[in-house]
Length: 426
Ligand SMILES: Nc1ncnc2c1ncn2[C@@H]1O[C@H](COP(=O)(O)OP(=O)(O)OP(=O)(O)O)[C@@H](O)[C@H]1O
Ligand SMILES: [Mg+2]
Image (cartoon, rainbow, N blue to C red; front, top):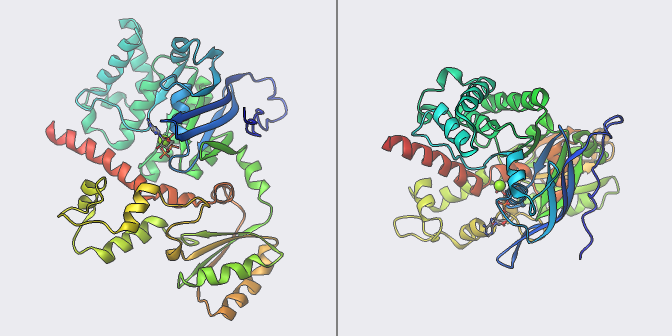
């Protein structure tokens, strides 16, 4: 067997916290789909009782697959795990009684009221009528939906639906709650209100939580420790502060007027001994791959909107019988990055992120170097490393591109279309 990941240990714990028991233990867990996709690759980690563990990773990194194995929905190819002391293979029923799961895709019945959705779930867990009623009331209060409990779910906002799903996941008083992208596609205000609910649950009910997200600020705000997974392997596991501290130095983000300058200036910067690392990013401050892709689509299509792209995406057709250009098809089927983590759209990237020693003093030198090559700088920003920078450093990818990626947008569109479609029929 291959050596297990170097993150076998429980990770950093504050002094005095060493006595907290591990409520989840994962050992060399692996899932291979169809003998070829190694979705989760020999991962080992543990979660302390009462902890919130943030699970960050690019699209397809293996986050949902891991949660599906821990919740007994999916059988591992190899490896083992215990949840609340129960082995996921030997004692799946006890594991299921110990956990709540809020799935990545919505699973509410929008033709029922909020209370009916909860009641149905309580019946599945064989809760007695009086217990069900009492729990429904308690959970609706926790997520502040009591006054809308008897309205049909199709009349709820996105944030209310997500809160109801969290309430449903808690109905049987689980010890552990899995939240798969709890705030995907929600506006910042609603997202923050969900964060507060999650935090309260953790503090008041001591529920242990594993939360997957593409939002680094969400993981930073909520999680005691953050696990970053990439291509099925754990590439970082530590507290947010420690992860940031490991990137010694400053980040200088450069945005150039002309993307063609990026490959010219990059090797010159890499030669400097005070530059520790250079990463190509969409730009120091832009909206990332999505905006470049939209630009490309606009450039090549006359009047073919996103609707046409959505319906034709599996066949490589753009609607109206038109074929998508090869590079767009390739991007959609293979993702945004190639093997070495380089963006397929690097030609369009206007930004470079540098990890440098003593950034403040280096900026004049960087500007001079740019002038010498004839490159026009649009912006120069200096900041201390953030979790976005940590993500870029360990995965080679810009998480802003991941969360704004085409597939992410398609997924959100599908979720919204699903909700709207059912609403219209209702
Ligand atoms: N049932 C399945 N059959 C075949 N491949 C699968 C299946 N489920 C997941 N995969 C593949 O496993 C890999 C990991 O998928 P997973 O859904 O765990 O990623 P993720 O980290 O949750 O991504 P996202 O951020 O997009 O939700 C992907 O390559 C995916 O295509
Ligand atoms: Mg997922």
